[in-house]
Image 1 (tube, helix red, strand yellow):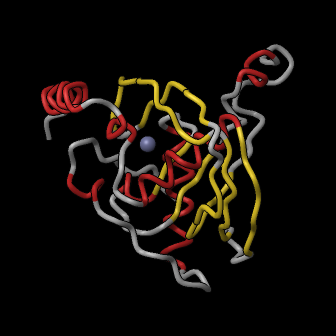
Image 2 (tube, protein in one colour):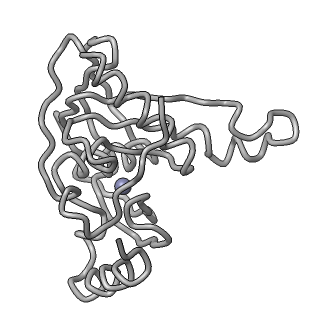
Length: 182
Ligand SMILES: [Zn+2]
């Protein structure tokens, strides 16, 4: 259980295609899942994929409830961060994407302090495995659909800035290099 360092664009490891996870999960992989959750909540973020902590495996975690508007509105009664909905997505695969699209402002823990509008399919049907090795299939829409597509992109070595114009992307890359020089 540990908060790990999040790789910052343009780290080459963010561009690798991650490898499928084998079941049953090894203790090492279980540790990676725990670290992903710890690191996401610590950041704080709504999603984190294994390549972002330098692990080339097809695993992502999300919690789209924890920081949602509803939770914030209820802050008086319920301390912020009390309501959690940690989801673990292993070997996710899209079975269907809607033709209808939706545009959301996205950000990424690997591209800090940068937000941009990205247009993606509005709804998706996903097949994935949970941490117990159970297979699931479900349709998602709204913010959850955005988060899943964003995290899936990380497993393919893609970042949300890839959807922007080359000019915008280069400006962001320059900014990252300057500010987060490693
Ligand atoms: Zn991201």
